[in-house]
Image 1 (cartoon, helix red, strand yellow):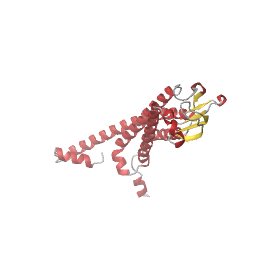
Image 2 (tube, rainbow, N blue to C red):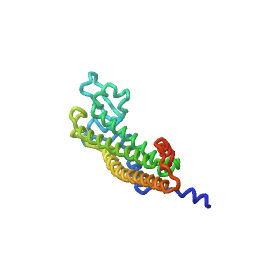
Image 3 (cartoon, rainbow, N blue to C red):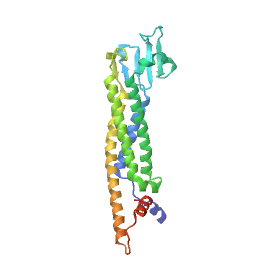
Length: 244
């Protein structure tokens, strides 16, 4: 019984870290759905448009004929944007601004899930000694990852929303409307922004606690009898080898 209580006598994760990680997990779910689903923009059903819907990686058509293609080919069904079916019109389907949107969302996806792995280790305290020693650094890295994800998503939704109704992209843009996949990306951006604020607060507090603990240890050492100030090389070795 005593050994179990001794194992649990270590600092738990703070509420700011728990809430920040929880919001990041929720945002990651929305981001994954937005990343994979082909409903960033769709046509009104009443318009009977040949364009049906599209996402970052998929287009859906019904009897669509590209007017600048020399052969009378009809495009039907949903296909990946890099599939052989869309090879002849890929330049039309994938303009430069859309490639930037794909890149920004992909970076946000990678940064978010990378930060989630770090925060998961902090929450479960594994490995224990490493987390307790470098918690301030891990939280700072998580904050940097989540805030970067929020910034990249902001750029993605801003660029896509500003170019979705261009007349040199999809035909008859007035028949189209931004759909739920785009809305999920916006929601993920807002939640990640809120999570980054909590993580910034936690990272700042963890750094302050680390500095206070370091100063306390130095004061205790100076009060010991026979204390001699360590040399520069020796102080650097103590600093790199301690838990604080």
